Structures are given as C-alpha cells and as structure tokens.
Length: 170
Image 1 (cartoon, one colour):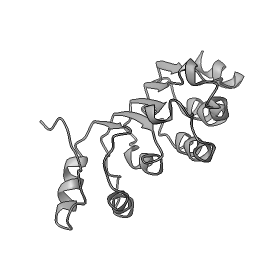
Image 2 (image 1 turned 120 degrees about the horizontal axis):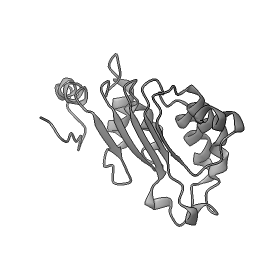
Image 3 (image 1 turned 180 degrees about the vertical axis):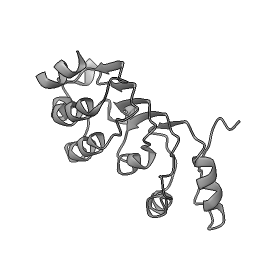
C-alpha cells in the first residue's frame, strides 16, 4: 500500500494521469513550510483539477499555513475529511501572520468541508497570540463549526467562538 506520495517536480503531460491516479488513493496530507512544489506546478494542479478533486478520498489534513501553500490549500479539501489540524507555520513564529494573509486564511477556513468532520484542531500557541490576531477568525471558524453535525466529537481551539457556536458544540 502506498504510504507517501510526493510530487517533487513539474510532471510531464503523460505523468498527469499517474499523479491523478495516486492522488485519488491518498488518505492523509501534510502541508508545511517545506512544501517543495514550484508555483508553476501548483498552477498546473489548479488548472487541471479532475472531477471530484485531486484527493477525493482524503480523510486527514494537517495544514501548517505558509504564504506558499495558502493559495492552494483548498486543492486538498475532500468531502471525506474526518480530521483537520490547522496552525501557523514555524516561519511565522517570530513575525506573526502577515496582515495581507489574514483574509485569505479566513476565506480558506470558511470553505472547509464539514459533512464528515470528526476532529477540528486550530492551534494558536499562546506565545504567538500577541503577534497574530487569531480572533479575526472567530466568524469564519464559528461558521465552520455551526455547519458540523454530530460527527464532530473532538474540537481543540484557542480562538474565541461566538455564543451560538458554543451552544452548538454543547
């Protein structure tokens, strides 16, 4: 069984069908600051999305937000996602999340699929709270949680939520 799948360069035209074939099997993805795909490859991924998406069976997504993977994180969304973990990358640990990235992060979070979601973790270390206004995400994360059904059984969150969202979780 395939345990890891890497795209390390720009696939040839013939290789795109193999990329789609292997990507369709993936159950777990990890997006981090060492994501080595070039912008041209990512744009080709965006332009060549097959019906059902690149990762239709994906169940677990760990997303360490960076300026490089932010525009393409939605390519890893699947209606079968059961676990999602989101945190800022180490590259932003000292400077905080740049203000230009905040609306894009909130928009991407709002688009998270929730139909099968069992676990949602949004990690904002206390030591970074003075650098990144995570409270700006209260609205988008509250909306995501409100769309989750009873399958959501694990929720780890250090960002304030709306009162309606807290009632929904209870």
